[in-house]
Amino acid sequence: SDRGEARAGLARVGRAALVRADAGIAARRTGEARRWLALATELQVPRAQRDAVAERLRQAELAGIDMTALRSEAQAALVDREPERALPLYARWLAAAPEDAEALEGREDALSMLLERVTGALRGGDLAGAARWLGLARRHDPGHVELPGLQAAYAQALAARLQQAKEALQRGRVDAAAARFLVLLEAAPDGDHRVE
Picture 1: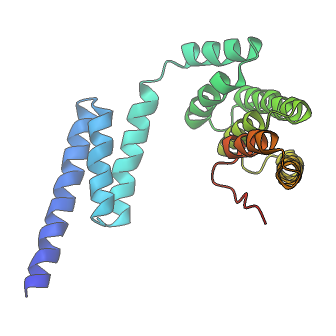
Picture 2 (picture 1 turned 180 degrees about the vertical axis):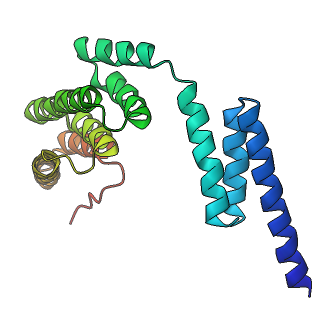
């Protein structure tokens, strides 16, 4: 009976969280509404009820977007060749207008600029830069057609740098080995760079 009461109590709290989320939407406090909706989700309020509130929240957030300013800012970032600034703007634009051809084209241009940086970084031996830009490209379009080839080139560059570090260590060139291992740690801090 205690479990039943606990479940019933959690269900009541979940329903109350949805009511508060709706109140936040009505008051144009979308951040507050999002927090209450997250609580309702965590408490496993039935999906249909959550989805209805989530859609009202999405519509409220979209209504608050100045599309003209957003378009202008995204295009300016692209003209300035700043894909790291442009991509989040295009993501917001596409959230509001998923089929907008101009937004899709702009996002693709920004991704291409970003991936050009990966290629340049790999040529210049900047593994940390290549890793950072690859990660950003994956976040914005994990299925981008150029990613597999660039990820393979990055993995080869890491392997080559690891081999150079091992060889330097085997030859007793401790300073050179340390420098190469530090580059590897910066480029792939979670990678496996064990010396065998």
